[in-house]
Image (cartoon, rainbow, N blue to C red):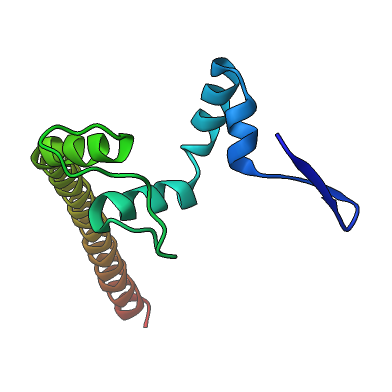
Length: 132
């Protein structure tokens, strides 16, 4: 692994750093990085579009069976897409149902409060009519 010093900072090529780690260290670093939004977005863009937003891409082959990690990810996504879509739709439907239920409950509370206000106004009118 090659390191350089620039403006008082030690600079290391990230790829060289990962390559220099043992399997456990590499897995730890990759697991941490795999959860970062920018990495997820970049990988998703490669799977769907073939390129990251800045026009980079991982190695891919054009063979009947996937051999690179990117090829395997594309195949996995293709094979599981309908299940993922079903799960997403079910989750969205559940969220919409819950939101509609909360809206109905809040609306019922508002109607009850308006009814109580109307009843108090009626009682106040009756009271003022009797006392005048």
